[in-house]
Image 1 (cartoon, helix red, strand yellow):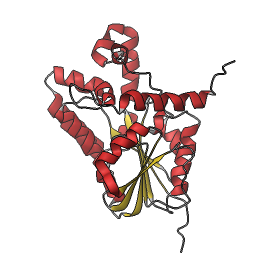
Image 2 (cartoon, one colour; image 1 turned 180 degrees about the vertical axis):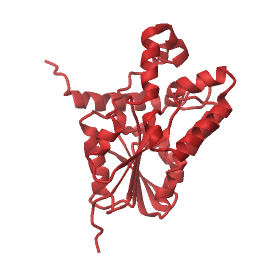
Image 3 (spheres, helix red, strand yellow; image 1 turned 120 degrees about the horizontal axis):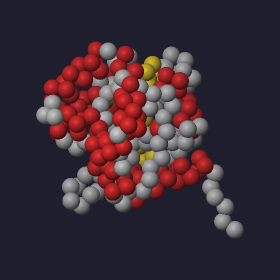
Image 4 (cartoon, helix red, strand yellow; image 1 turned 120 degrees about the vertical axis):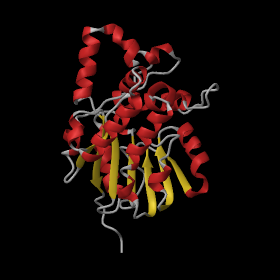
Length: 278
């Protein structure tokens, strides 16, 4: 008799299946990853907005070191974040993602199939850790464990940065209200796009970022990016995309802690805990 997998194992299987069979495959028509097409606004202005906001956190990794961990990087390792390090270590459940990462990093990289909640690395290996948009696709109970693993495998006080999402902000509340009173708004917001493709379902769950961060002494939560695909599509249709991207970018830079309450994407910053071997 066939038995079902435990829920956490089902979620891990879901993540691996999505990215191995779909997410990190190239769309023949555009050459872009299918996951990008599904979840992102691919216009040049929005792509620049997304990249520039991530690069605000590059300063934490500028001192470099021997090993940089790109946790759950898939096919899009953050080269700029790890360029000051001698070796760029990519850890991911998706073999296809690691195959794509190798094309970008080459011999300077190390590629490890790994569960982020149970990293196969010794204490204090890394001089910097980045988890970019990977944590919220993990089982809820594994997410704090993964942050604990990032801290364990990083040298004491080394930067650990997690790009995260949240459903606990003003923008998400607006989305829920609009969809409740006007279900037809799904066409505008992009909800339901996945059903129009051959994409497998992808699991996602986000804790309130402040609640998650509070489990780790000294952790800080700031706004990574306010706008989602929903807003950028709307602004583009209204002819207001460029000025509003500029406006929100300014707010995110100047009021990064306040904007956590408004925007969708956050950054959790903490530090390694392992004593460096002498």
